[in-house]
Image (cartoon, rainbow, N blue to C red; front, side, top):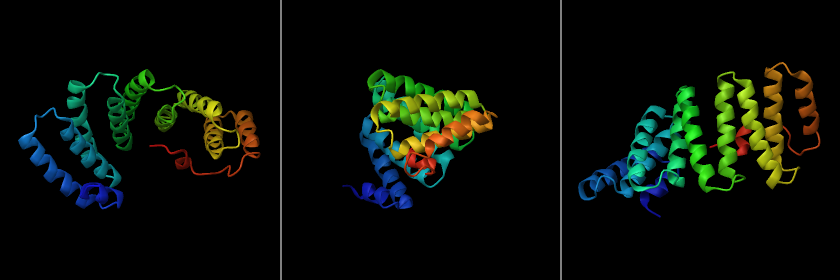
Length: 207
């Protein structure tokens, strides 16, 4: 494991950024500017900024990655889908919800072309998109995304899995925000038979 990776693993983000920036300067001197090692430097710096809550700085780094990746990879390559997701997260954190949703959609389209439709990454994207719609008070769109994630979970997990409680609680909240009280009550009643029903939504590994 490199020292940079150790710093990131230990949450020593300032040290990680310093190491990554030094590495990037060297790589820019000796490598072609479309080399994937340069992309990796950009993404490592972006990750560290994101972890610190410096979302403008993270976004600046994340934007550099697809310019190179699109020269090297097919447009449906998984790495490009992941970069679009990271861009979406940064835009979302900055309150630029429309742009975030657009990037989430691009990521979803790319990942659906290469992954099984019940892959955990697909669930994460549906949930992240639902959260973005919810932040816009677009409850119908949010509900649609949550349901898609829920259907995938139903197809791959035992019905007593804690993630079902998380999704059902969020569904109930969306129904409540829409004024659909009967539907919300019904979902909450279903929660009673599931262990740990009121887990924080971050338990769902939303990334």
